[in-house]
Image 1 (tube, rainbow, N blue to C red):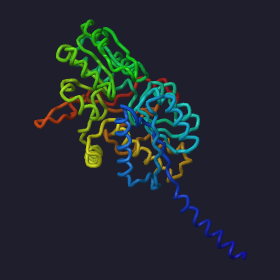
Image 2: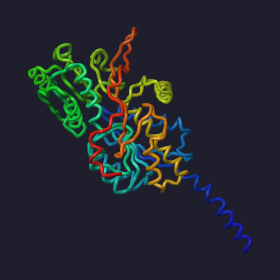
Image 3: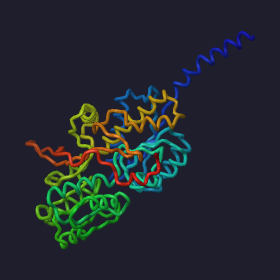
Image 4: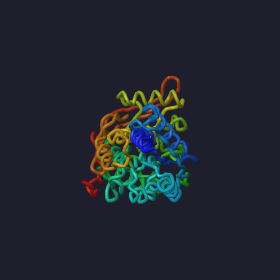
Length: 389
C-alpha cells in the first residue's frame, strides 16, 4: 500500500509540469461589433485572429482562448464588459478598444485588478500622462501624435490659417489639440460636433467657409468620415479650400469615399505598403483570408498578438510573473508591421509618422500609398506627466 502511494505521488509530481503546460492564455477582446462602426471592430478581430494564426494559435507555447465582447460604442457598456472579463472570465490579458471614452470608462477596473492590457487603437492623453500604468500598453499611438504630424506637414506646405472640425469626445478634442500644438499659422476657428449621432455637417462647413481659411483640418473615423467628405464636396469646398485629415480616410472607408478622397492627404504611423517583411506577409495573408485590405486598426491589433506572445515566452508560460512580462513588453521585442519602434516610459510607442495619399489605378481601384516620412521617432507630449520610471 505504501509503495502504491509513493508511486502515485511520484506520478503526480511527474505529471504536474505537463498539467501546468495545459494552461490556456485567456484574452478578453473589447471592440465594437454592432452598428455602423462594426466594420472597425471586425477589422481588428480579423487581424488579431490572423496574428494568432501566424503564431500557430499559441502564445509562448500555450493554447489561446479569446473572448470577444461588443462595447456597442458606449462607455457604460464597455465598462460592464470589461468588468465581466476580469471578474467572471478571469482573463490574463485584455485587448482592443476603439474609442477613447470607452477606454477611459474601463481603465480603473483594469488597473485596480492588475490585469495586463494592450490597447490597439484608443489613445486618450490621460493614459500617456497622469493615468499611465505598468499594466497598460499601447500598440497604436497617443491621440495627439497623428494630428501633430499633419500640423507639421501643413507648415511644410505653407498653410497660414486653418479651421478645425471634429467630434466632441475625448479623441476629437485630442486631435484638434494635436494640430494646434505644431501648426505655426492661425487657427481661425474650431467646431466640435455631437458624437456619434451627428452626421449633418452643413452648419460647420458654412462656418469654415465664412472664416476663409487656407485649409480645413478634419477628424471623423468610420461612417462619419464618409458623410463629411460627401458634404464637403457637395458644399463646393473641394478644390476651393484644401482639406487635411487624420483617420478620416482608411482602407475601410475608401471603398465608399472613392473619388471624394482624392487629393486629401492624411497622416498615419502605418500604411499598407510599408516595405518590411512582417507587413508584407500581414497584408498579403489578410487579403487572401478575408478578401479585403486591412486598415490601420487591424495592423495595430495584429501587433498586439506578437507583443503578448513575447511576454508569455519570456516567463515560460508562468502568467503570474506580471513584472517580468511587463519588462519584456517594454522592450518591444517583436517584429512589428510598422518596422522598428520603441516604447516611452508611459508605454506609448515612439515611432515614425507618414504622409499617406489616395491613388487610383487604370482599372478604377483606389488605394492608400505612403508618400513621405513626416516625422521620425515621434514621442507623445504627455510622457512627462507619467510617474512611472
